[in-house]
Image 1 (cartoon, helix red, strand yellow):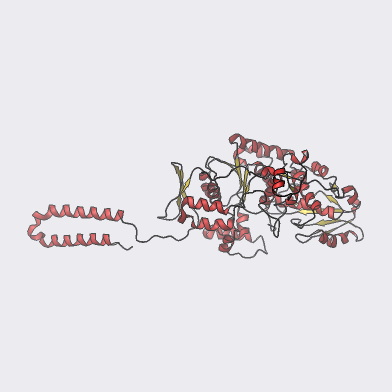
Image 2: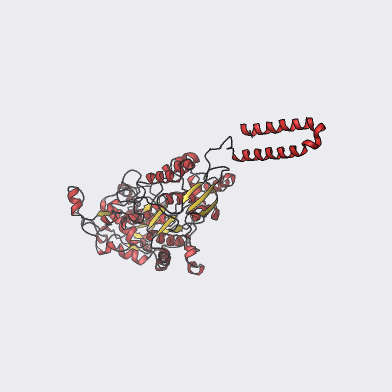
Length: 551
């Protein structure tokens, strides 16, 4: 390491003095020995002082992967020590500060309500259903991917003028859950609430004849169903068609009555069984006992998600090897450039990054947080920074005893359903990815009153996290708030269009309450929908996301 000018001058002076003394020590050994000792000691002390005060000649400012070594709390500051020797400390305030907006609700949420009643032109099941025509579906993936399949299956049965057999659930996917439909959802309620829309039977009658098994393409529209599926029912001895891997097999763009049928299924007919609902409500009540308001976070940082994303999270060869093995589950999954994926906002935020985003948005360390997650990749070490930022950290396992969870814990879908219920009832829901649970909960929370739902704007946040050590906390927080405009779950935040998933933005099923003042201001622009019926104003029933190859 190079020495600076001050260091060199000190050493030169020391050497000169030392040489001078040595030359004369033969003649004046006894006279100069005390003087030599004193002078040498002073110069050494001066050299040590200069070394301590002088700044280093070089400073390493290369970007580093975000990683916390140590966190401590003092004087209202969370001190985050970065994994870079000599790097400046990034100081995060304990409180959220004043950000000029309400954290727990939207000012405009009271102007909207869910509306999914059928129109007068909707043909009821009694008239629409052919007597000897049955549709069977196999819903694939995890719980919420299955939920989208079940919702779309009801609409597909209506399009095909067929009875719907109670759907079969995937038992072979990554989650390996052996649960049947009736062990997760209330079958009797499902049938009764949809009785005017589609006739639903528990199982295929013995006299139904041959069953044709096939698969429809993704986002198949009504004409696609009529062209591909209806002819099968006209084949000899065929009265039933089974559609496999049924997820996202129905177009996002349907006519109003079919979209509203989707909403009646998803938001009213799919209700969990009583044991799941009861346990979910207990967990929610226990969160409310701890705090008037709480945030629910779906971390979605499990190994399968990280592997599917194709992103790199700083774990070295060990991470690359472990996630690479998991990626082999998807034979057709293309190789991805991790840096490009992150720059394009395709990578889930780490728990640390989610915590910093929430602090920047105004959520202080006193906020109670419910975390919905499977087994987080990296375990407690990965979660430690988030817990340091939000010490009031709760999970279903911390809120309930092993005995209370015993009937649910062997089944991933039932455990997922408990998480869904608490997330749905939270004051603010934070989704860390754009998967099935995030989409369904975002749509559900819009339908039932536009409760705040925060989705990280990962494309813009990537650069902020990458450069945060250069801007300081307040500059960082200001930029985070700007980046999150349009990602906070406000009404009219998401516009329908290409790529929009109906389950995430069920705009056809969201009506605006009549307001004379607003109507005059907008010159009669909005529709004067009648106020919601008592049935539509009831609290939502309640479900969890996973994905599979159809993520």
